[in-house]
Image (cartoon, rainbow, N blue to C red; front, side, top):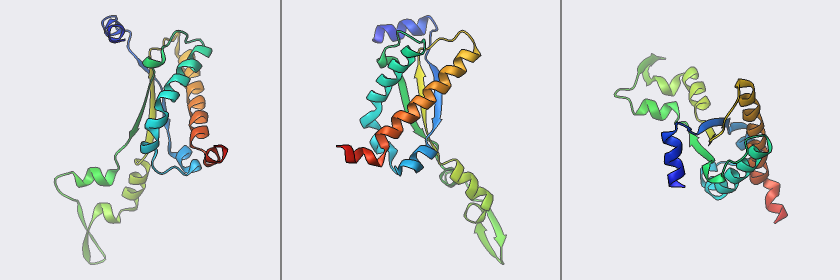
Length: 159
């Protein structure tokens, strides 16, 4: 496998991001609050399932070891602002307050950027942008359905 990775690198046949999925709606619908703790238990099955699904839609010969489903979380703005050198102070109602604590706009941005994502990479090849979009849409739908099945509260009842 390592030799294959190096061969792909030297031939410039790199992995491509074939999908990037926001998990916000899915996690809200399933009531999952700590996806980061659950994800390691389903990652290998997800990557294997995606490899199989890619084969069904014309991306044959992709080894599941070469499918990477990477979960990441965008750090919220409040934490990023706290790491800056100085807080922005503003006058409000005859007192001084931190901008990030009182700004409605800042709060909205902060909530939006607290998103979790799943990026899917694979050594796929596309003939054109239309095929690339078709593969992306299919993998996004497939991955959402897979995760919904795995994270559904009813799943525990079937055991």
